[in-house]
Image 1 (spheres, rainbow, N blue to C red):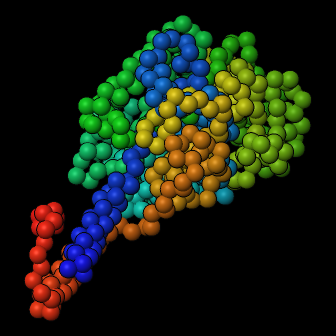
Image 2: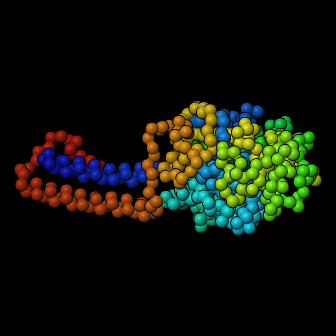
Image 3: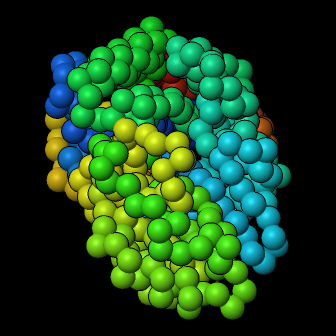
Length: 464
Ligand SMILES: [Zn+2]
């Protein structure tokens, strides 16, 4: 009898183990939603009551100072968040770019944003997630409606600034729940950047805008709760950059110092790429280098190392950087804004908010600082993905996570459907083999051993 019991329990243990393996493969698909409120400066949460941001801090983590990447503009930093690369490496070096090798221009407001060629110096996380057999969803994140490397997100929205935040959220919730369920989503919203530019961040009117963003975060939290996702999805809320106040008294007019016949103007203030006409580099440089104490001109090879902003042909031979709050224009006839960003990424005013909560994150934990390039390896760890080469460091931010000592498994690049079929096949195959073995041994033992007299009632009961 002991032999028979051993075989029976072995059969059941094997079956249970296989079933548990299958279900844990499903559970290991951690869910993650990355949200960017464009231009949400780190200290906006302290300006007006922001109960939804506060709730996330209490339930999760907050990073007080996030050093984003140079230049502190929208397109470079959004691509950094999903690649872990500085702009010189991922290739989206500005909102307005020129590639002198290929004689091609890029404007964030032009059709070139849909030309994958500009984006393909890097691979965004939604593509890597899909290559591991998962599904990604993107609601208007810069670059997410582009077939980067020939791959769109599994679900995405073509950019449409007039689509309300609430509609974007509802799409994402559907994607997390749908038959082709995503495990990774990205969500973009244009505010408070737009109002910050128009009103200036110091305007009292910005208080209303910030309160509105908090309400939008409340809407997202409510939708996640209603969908039963709130305690499953890891939610990261951050931004690309901050915002600083400008002044009509702080304008530098480049026409005062150098003829515009000598160069081509690339990108906008406060960091301007200057492409001198052939043979005019030294003349333009010498005209500008000591022209104004509120402006620095760098030859490309002189750009400070800590900017990580040199090694790309899309970075111009000269760049002009102005001091915080200053604006550089060719003359005052250009359009002027009351708020701007793009300045030195070590300035507190340029830095974004960062809060996160969910099963992967610690609770009620405040971290002093991180770099935005570190977010990518952090997200890869949460998703169980092997990160591509990047400029970030998981160890620098691992204290944000609950399990600081256990690295997540790397998921092999096997499509989900075949692996699921494999698991079912394995279970059925193993069950058949073990079942056959069980019946065979039972037959043999019944023939060779005397009849059994079981007294333990538990053993006589079905075990399943
Ligand atoms: Zn932005």
